[in-house]
Amino acid sequence: MSEKHHNKGSEWLADAGVRPTRQRVALATLLVGDGQNRHVTAESLHAASQNAGEAVSLATVYNTLRAFCDAGLIKEITVDGSKSYFDTRTDDHPHFYWEDEARLTDAPAEELEIRRLPKAPAGAEIAKVDVVIRLRKT
Image 1: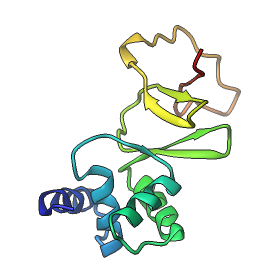
Image 2 (image 1 turned 90 degrees about the horizontal axis):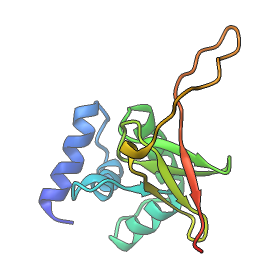
Image 3 (image 1 turned 60 degrees about the vertical axis):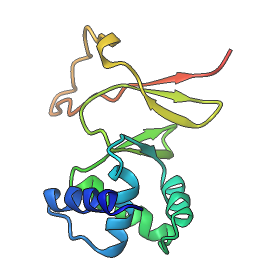
Image 4 (image 1 turned 90 degrees about the vertical axis):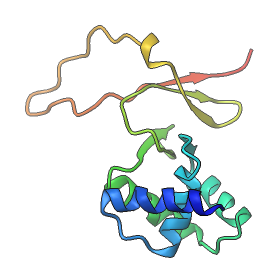
């Protein structure tokens, strides 16, 4: 990893007040070092870290992704109630889930229109709405 990418990962953590351990900086650099948004699973980030020569356990990757979520650096998107993806783009936007490839991508937010939501039950309020559009190739 280049020094420029490494610095971007370190700055990303510092801006959120996250303690920059060696492993967190390595994972942050993989996530945002090149400035591109990513959708990763813990397993795919672990594989990328191994390919980059970083000695990071899968448990550490899970814990680090949780810490990044807690700090507001990434968002968790759950598909099928069990498969979690982590998105470095934290604004509200819809996603395409490609069933044949088990892959998550951004969908064009400007094309999504939600005209009305059901009323929240008594004693509750709507916190957010996640839109995941499931696709399969024809």
